[in-house]
Length: 76
Image (tube, rainbow, N blue to C red; front, side, top):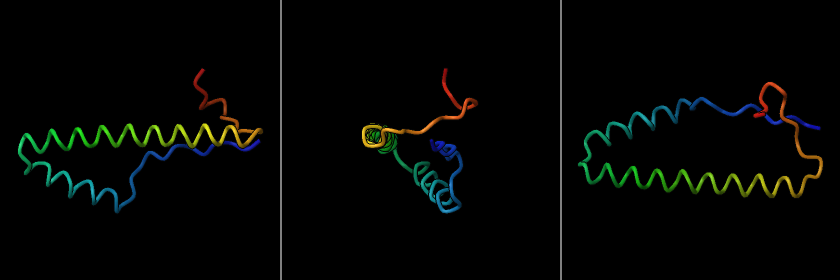
């Protein structure tokens, strides 16, 4: 069986630049705009979570062999 790759925990240089640019814009935003940004980020975070869950579910259903998680990464 194949092993799952390690999770990605670092941003690319381009992503770091985008985050820095957005943080500058957020600092200039009004409280109402900041609240709207937070609401939008929360919504998109849940949409991404749901999408990944669907992908994983479909992958497990289609791939009977599945993938093994190394012992040091298992959540027992």
